[in-house]
Image (cartoon, rainbow over all chains, first blue to last red; front, side, top):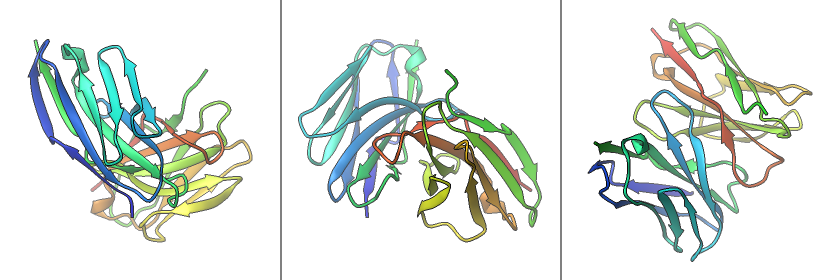
Amino acid sequence: EDQVTQSPEALRLQEGESSSLNCSYTVSGLRGLFWYRQDPGKGPEFLFTLYSAGEEKEKERLKATLTKKESFLHITAPKPEDSATYLCAVQGQTSGSRLTFGEGTQLTVNP
Amino acid sequence: DAGVTQSPTHLIKTRGQQVTLRCSPKSGHDTVSWYQQALGQGPQFIFQYYEEEERQRGNFPDRFSGHQFPNYSSELNVNALLLGDSALYLCASSPGQGIGQYFGAGTRLSVL
């Protein structure tokens, strides 16, 4: 059974203070690892897909990296508008098309 | 290009009632998945529809059922509502049964 654990549960940063969110996973054959951003009361917004260890992707102040056991979402010089819950999900070879999500990291960036 | 659209946005029901939620996939997508997200939790997979058939199902009781129409839109039905069914119900679409899914804004269901 695929499993995803995210840490920390909540993170409070000052504007400009860089940090990283962690996503540890177990899956029998990774098809893809996904990062989503979710604002309160809204649906998850797609950020990145990573397919294999060593892969990195960037978008504005966000950079996602992948190893065989975990993924990191690095946030450089965050702004208050980066405040949201960040969700990590995996899709495994034996799980068909279903996504297995972690509980998310709630990020707050103070001005 | 419209993304994934869901209706209604909010719904209030009482215990024992039945509810139907609707989803139109992103243009070009033919696969629809449904997820339940309780407050403060990650989304949980309910089931997936492709070619008008249920292809995969998560750990949800038979009270949860669905349908996919020829235009790829989908419905989620929940019978005999329980207080614990209160959640944000998310629809996600993808092209075929491939990698990655795009989500709608969700339907917030409150069961009183």
